[in-house]
Length: 272
Image 1: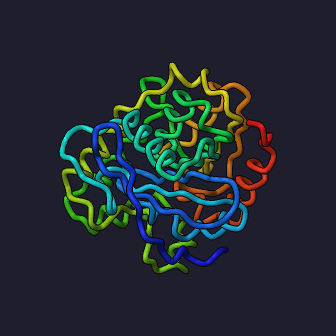
Image 2: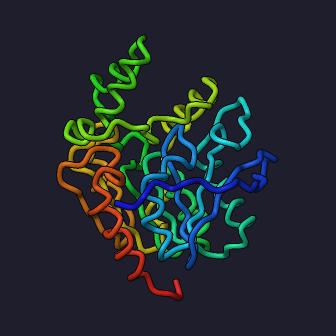
């Protein structure tokens, strides 16, 4: 596995509503936009970002409400956060990029690819969902575990949903996928609302970018059954399931997931 990403200074883009969105750029090569999960900043990608930097100029984003970005206290929408990502591409001067979104980042990436097809070369959707009434929701037991009154119990539950017991037994952290520690509570609620309201079902057939859908077979946080729904709804999409992986497949199973994504993106035609 690659060494953890050691951090880069943030620059800022301005979203259409005036919100300042922090972003970070590292590596050399064609641009690859990496979009992180709910309630997480660019640090989500720290453990695996180095695996992409040899081939791509990676661009990460602190979603509104996280990291160094502004944190407006009003409802957030995944459609709006796609416009935030577009503002970042504009600020970096990137006309077209590969886009790799995981979890809520995958929801955001769906809107970016559907509404701005000219800006997306290849699309990777990881551990994510189309949203709406046809999506497969997490079980009531999972919801209950994440809604416990004891924050320590919530953290234990979240870690168990992210990683296998074997991984947790040999990795003591810090874990970069369990939420931005500096995020105010109201922003966490805004992120949860954005994820819960996401519904891209009707626009998925309009995605024209070559698309790879990746999911762990043991993901209960965002049930694996959403992966074939996405792949079946997006024209020509390819589906890859990683056996035994949970929600943070991209980290624990990086030796499988990173080459899988790199091979897929390398096969996207240059003129896309």
